[in-house]
Image 1 (cartoon, chains in turn brown, red):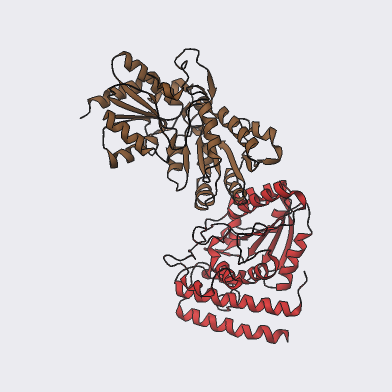
Image 2 (spheres, rainbow over the protein chains, first blue to last red):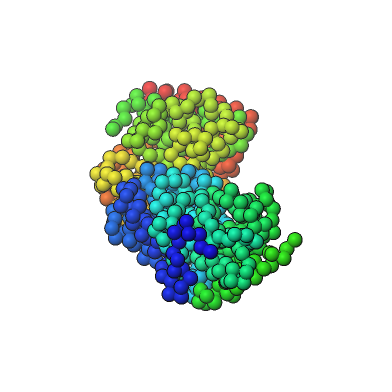
Length: 329
Length: 288
């Protein structure tokens, strides 16, 4: 059942569940951060409206810098602003930032130890019709490998707003992964959020499998849990909104309790959130793991639902993975 | 501020001392870059001993100007200049590139916090300087007297990011930004005009709405005058294209791109130090 202590949206399984793009939460969070802290500045590479930075730019035109289609410059200019005491948020599509400008992020942001906040919108395969060039499914791998970088992957717009606000004061570089599509709202304004803390969204008395999900696919994981419960299979579902630093304690506890793990992410299996979980468990508490994600392929055009199904990340696939992992020795 | 003859001699001697110290450091290190550091000694001297608003005893002084070295591989001249200016003991130059040294092979702020940026990968320094100038403009508007200086090599102008930054600086009319290009015509694999032609160079900067000044990068008075002239430019960033002689100060090294990325061995180093020490004597006699 849903964990009532987290004050989640109890209507999340309704057919008419409220759906909001995760990037909208970023836009609102940045606006609110700008109102609270005069040092917050925004920089964008010609995608202000698509990344929802326009909410900030319209309110604070003097603290917004339009960089043009130049993502390498975007990252390093932000580093310079941070060196002068500003708290810069940069936004583009995840494919281009942190994709195209990875070395600039490594050297001028992380190596330089400047607290630049990188919002990568249109992450995942659910970008849909734009096709494979615009579907960032490698971004978790390339950001979590960077020392000092915090990696956040909110599951809905409300969580994205909280993640954006929380990233202001970390004093470190932060990557915030955002999806383009409308996403079911699973949390509420009252749901607690803390960087580095994983949360159990679905609880059971005697769970046999732990599902760890990140981003919008958390909704599919919860749907799977509900369906499995109806079939008498008990699982727990963890929302892993912070991929780095990893909440190792919570992950080990879940593995101890269930003995089997399924990870779910809209990302390449190699190097992603599941890999981070596997690194943690292989060292501390080895258990069988099944990985839901894109299996070493590029994306293509289609509707988000078609693509999620085609690449094996739907509710049905999660249920199958739970059954598969249950049979492993 | 205009330079007196005495001050010019003092700065020329200082530049020569900086060259001597960096050659000594390179011989000890056994690896590193020689040509660029030698040819930038005059400009670094004018900046750190005359132009820059800074306090070596208080490197985090908030009101200071900012100095961004983009081509981090010429750090022997940065370290040598900082040491002579009083940021750390000259003696410490002997630790260059060694394990545990504050003087990393390419500059790293974690090790030496008085550096404004860590650098090495080419082409991103101007962007960082633009960010600093933008922050200054947001806080102090168009009348800010602070200056952000960015030192670039000519070879790194082949990196597209430099021009992304140049475009933005022109668009934002960053009067508080001054870039210096070390136009020594060499890069690691040869002469720039053979590897990837940069000419017409000043026209490129003009096209992005920069104010362009060309100088002899070894003439102390011209260097100082150019920085002074840049202070009077409003509504535009300034680039100083400094024509320099790669390896300047050691005739055996001059103009030769092969000295871009290697240090002198003991024998070559001894020769270089002899040349530089003799040059020190010439500075005084020429001005007498």
